[in-house]
Image (cartoon, rainbow, N blue to C red; front, side):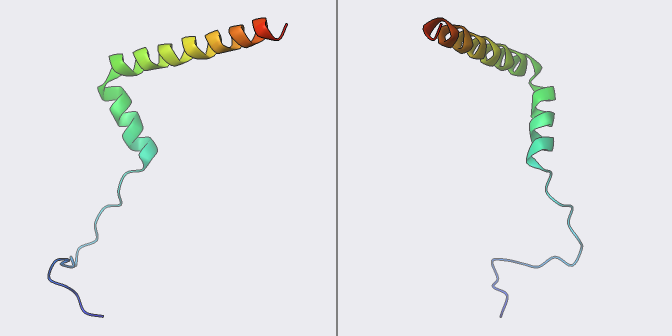
Length: 58
């Protein structure tokens, strides 16, 4: 198998890519207001759905 010129090989070991969870946590810390707003919307939506379902199935 030959190496193509488009993909050069590096002899130094590279750091592994950060995990999805680590990137998400870093993004939440960086955009604190947006994360809290989305969390609040999700909570209100879930509670609203549960209230409507409990009312319809009483």
